Image (cartoon, rainbow, N blue to C red; front, side, top):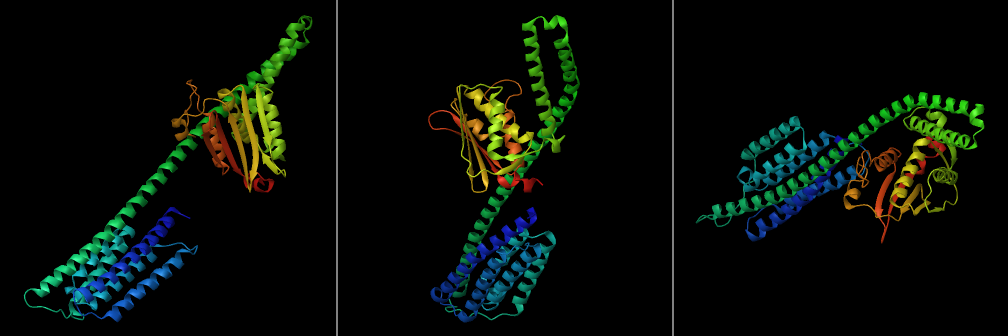
Length: 424
């Protein structure tokens, strides 16, 4: 659904709500004028017009329940019908001499806010024509007590009721429109923020991809040199030195894996990096890989997936989980917890720690770059990348402080985006 169609649908619903109020106002006005002011008006005919407005509102509500787009033409027709109904009521109650003729301005105010310029001027022309016709064609009101300023008194009373009705409807209308505008501005601000974050990710991805390519050559060179050293006789004689070379080679291999992961995460060699597995196997292997280079005192792992589900993943998803583990480990080296569950068609992953928890500011700005309590250059990108990567998969990330001590980050992903059928 486009933004314009959404706006038109909201505006049409607003017209329906205002028409309910207008109907109530008309009924109350008819009763006051007829019974309290003692003015003889054609009750049956005026009640019929109110009934027509009720039918129009019910038909409009049925229209809103359909999936068809709401157009400006429909809004224009709805307002034209409202002006026509008002004209019919005025025709039956004195025409242009009726103090409620000022309600035309209320209809024009609605049109100027809800319609485009051309439609608004067309509405003005139609209302003006109706006003002119009422000056010539109408059913005069028979007012009692015309002597001693009775007519003027009745007119002022009617003008006050007209003013009160218009004021109430305008306040309700303008208040609602202002709220809609604030919601729209907030939505646009969120879209701008999301666009800025995605642009930031693109620039980071290009930088990381370029750095990974540049690192490939020196890493390969160092690997060749280390292999040569291991075969040289003078190094073979020193067992301690050979062990250091093996350790250097292992760390070098890890650097190569990191570079490969960066390239795959940025979209390069993605097909080769895509792996078909199950959720249980994915998390089992991810935990093993992460524990190979980190050593929390306790890692509490609970995989409660019954039954297991087939998925397709690449290095980006694995890196997301790694980032959650790393953040928890830095906050709580002694204990890190992981639980994996399935809720209907969603995968729910919760990473917990026993650290100091998130500050209120960090919870409010979750997902924005460089928001961190680590106070070092470049920190604060882990959760930023996690939130945006998960958002692209249609999921959500929620951070919270646990009762007592520690914090948790809940990652929710729709299984449809991870299923082999969805990837294919």
